[in-house]
Image (cartoon, rainbow, N blue to C red; front, side):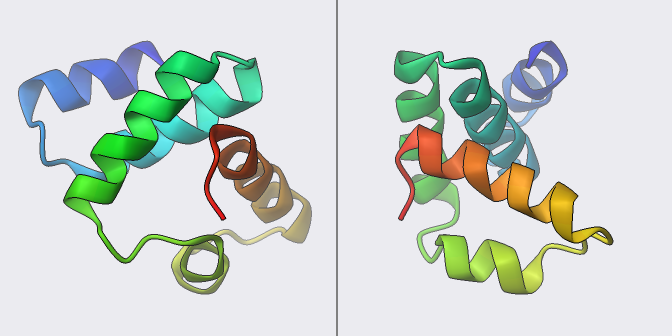
Length: 78
């Protein structure tokens, strides 16, 4: 999460940083951080959804994709 926060600090519109922070905070159970990161992600990428992530993110292994999506679910993304 530290590197995602640093990336966002340097460029607050960096969508990838917001995605990583939201998913990581969701998986870590840091609900306030996850919710804030998800709000910022929606600001920078209004069309974000689990379906978009599953379809567009170039994740090779199905189990890695499932883990990534679970982080977003825990962060509150539907």
